[in-house]
Structure formats: C-alpha cells, structure tokens
Image (cartoon, rainbow, N blue to C red; front, top):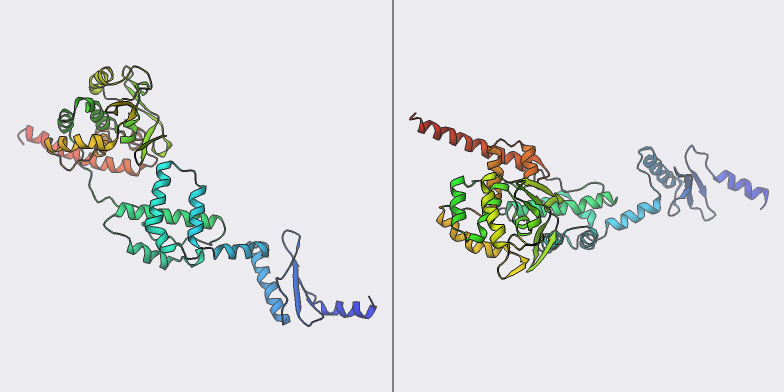
Length: 380
C-alpha cells in the first residue's frame, strides 16, 4: 500500500473521543466503537452522511452511559422476539411451568376461553395498557373472581416477557384488577347448626362434617386423609396430601400452596372420629378415611357428598351453605376462640394473612352478637 493511500485513509478517519468514523471508497461512512465488553462493534450498515454515522455513535454512547447497553446483535434479537405473536409465547410459557395437573388444566381453560381469542395473533410489543384495559373491561363483571384470576394469568405471562428482556415493562398495571373482591359475605354455621348438619348426613359422613367445620380442612384434603394421618390420642390430624380430579380421575399431590400442616382437633369431636375409624375405615395405615362408596381404594368425589349435603343444609335451615363454607366456619370459630391471624393461617394452610384477617373481622362481628345475647339473658 502506497504512502499516499495510507495518508488518505488516515485523513478520512475523524478524531473522536468515542468511536471511529471512516469514509469508504464508495463515499459512504462506516462507524464502530469499543464496547464495555472490550470488543469492537460496527454499525449494522454504512451511512450516507457523516452526521448519520455520528448520530448512531451518539445513540450507542447514551446506552452505555445509562447502563442500558447490550451488543447490537442481542438488541436485534430482542426486537425480533418483541414482534413474536403472543400465542406461541404463551404456549411456551405454559409448557415450561412446573404446575400441578389441576392448575395446568385451569390455565389451559383460561387461555383458550378468555386470553388467546383476544391476544393470540397480536405481537407482544403491541399489547399496551389501553389494549389490556379494553380487554379487561369486556370480561364478565358478574364473575369477579374469575375475572381477577384471568387477568393475573395474563400479567404473569407478560411478567415473563419482561424478565426475558422482550418488554421494557408489563402493561398489566390496572389497579386492583388481579384482586378478587368477595361479593358473598362469610356467614359461618353456628355450633348448633353444625350438629344439625352432621345429624342430617349419613353416618359415614359425620366425621367429615365435624373435621371440616372444626378443623378447617379443604375438601381435597379431607378426601385424601388416611388412617395414618389421624392421631386421636394426640388429638392431631396431619394434612400431608390433597386430591384433585382430572375429569373423573383422582390426582394426589401436596395440599394447596404446598403447605403440609398438623391441625389440632377440638376434644369434643374425638369420640365421633374414633367411632368413624372403627366402623368405616380399613385397618391399614393408608386406608382412606372417606373412601368412595363401593371402592375403599378410591377417594370420595365431591358430587357424592353434595347429594347428601343439599338435603342436610335444607333441614338445618341453611340453604345458602356450601360444603366449602364449613372451612370458613372452622376459621371463624378458631378466631372466636382467640386464634391470632398467624395461628389461623397455620391452621388453615394459608400463605398470606389477608384471608385470616377477613375471618378475624367476621369473628369480631359474631362476638358482638354473642355479647348482645348475653345481655338478653341478663334481662337487659
């Protein structure tokens, strides 16, 4: 290479405090710089004018100064991912999650029914707050719990897109949209109503009603209780597993929230539980406490109990009570007995204090009723 050519090339390079601009033989400008990774990074294409090249270098420098820099190749890949349709991304999200079978099936239904019809073909970057708000407004407002859960699922998927560096922020920022507002007030059964409900059920379900109402177990936890989980002498029920159903197939897993726990039985229900173990439960430690009728190896299904429950609640004058309300009853009774929110959480297997505080509030209301009745007895 001649001295004149080398001198010409040297003169076409601008002296700069960041990066280098070189004029090529075809008259276009090439820009490059040394990045934070100590590697050289060239502009993806040449520029028609020097000012365009300077603008590119200035933009790259701002990214470095703002600690937002990444190699251009990574940024181009991010842009490509941002144009990816929501549908494939959501499918990949669901496939990669470690979920209980019932939870996976629930998410599948929610995606298919509520989310994918609106967003499947939309690119991730086009899902903005106004788009989300319009979709959320269109969800059935008479189903607040369902609405909150569906919104929370969309938010979780888009949170992953933020973690994947596809989106800068999650557009699901509607205040309180993921919180289900309880419309149905908690109206627990009284101790007298519990006895009536028990007496109106077949004998094989007496212990079921008492454990649900006084210990606050979920239906799936009750249905998976086995002889080895009940220690009548110590007054303890060990909640180690729960059953859910995939259509008609029982699926045994950990209790909800993965929280195994031991619950103390009130002494007054011990006699009924002991009699139940003798009369209705097999001798082995893994014998089910409440097996399906005609099959001692299979957990009882909620539909079987519900058939008897509907009659019992009418007889007790509580046609409003669901089986799950026995669990609410257990929580309120524990609060009335003086359990703290933390103790109520531990007893029921809750992860947060929100539900426990709700039961405390109901208990305070019931305590006021009791105080008023005491005054009536006093002739006040």
